[in-house]
Length: 391
Image (cartoon, rainbow, N blue to C red):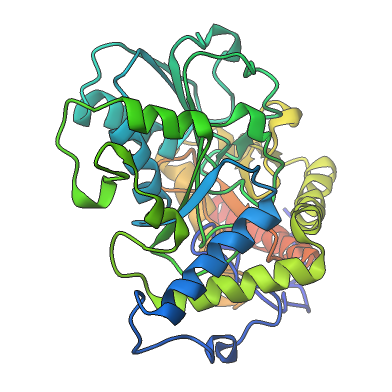
């Protein structure tokens, strides 16, 4: 086969990791100059910075009045598990999963919480479970955007306003880049390190009035680690949602998040963030249309993620190989491009089907995505030529 010529142009920013994600355009370490290093997070100034991060988050995301927003340890995982451990068990629970992190919540519910009235609906990578089977008299646990499958909810319309259970949404690769219908959500979590390109280890937990009522009316039949304790004396611990974090946060990470929130506000808030992700994703989607050997892992176009765009190689010569050989083929593409300094960390997640995963979140420039794609075409040709030669 004839291989493509090596491209002459590299992305200005070659970082396409799905977490931690690329920093905002123009970011430098000088953005952290105002960090309260060496100061207590419980000082007046420390609490003010934490409260500002909370307030700006609510403002940009359009969080309704009556909802609360808090900073949690342990990234999105810590925030989501705090909600699961504190709230689930009051009634039956439906857990949906269609990728790796949804499968973690299934395991938590089944093996750790040992919920007795539990229904699990797990779909293959690339497709959603049947949303029509959900019983909204029960609680619901699901992800908004499957980071490792590139499959997102097309909308929240399937969730009724008059539901009896509460809805827990892991939105770590959706928040800021995708619309959230707050009337349909009771618990929503995400990590700074995803769409906003912040530093890792901190999560955001947002609770609706219905979620707060559950916390204050239900005592779970299990011990709760300190890091998961959201109530005090049977009432919501409001301090957590005013900047009094459960444990010590990194004030450097807080300052970094404040910096990217300020950038988001400057460019036009959540609509602008979503538009940036849409533009980068469209570059990949258009490439898929004109490239016969690649396809979106998500089967239904209405579910194609605009942040974690997951791709599979459909060239019959590659798709017909054993799974381990397919995985090696994709990894060789990534490795070849990384050696050229033209793109980093865009391989498929370790538990996902073999392929590629290009992060197109709001901090990524569409021009950098466009510059990456010719390198993928070049590397694909090089790797395939090597396979044919070896055969």
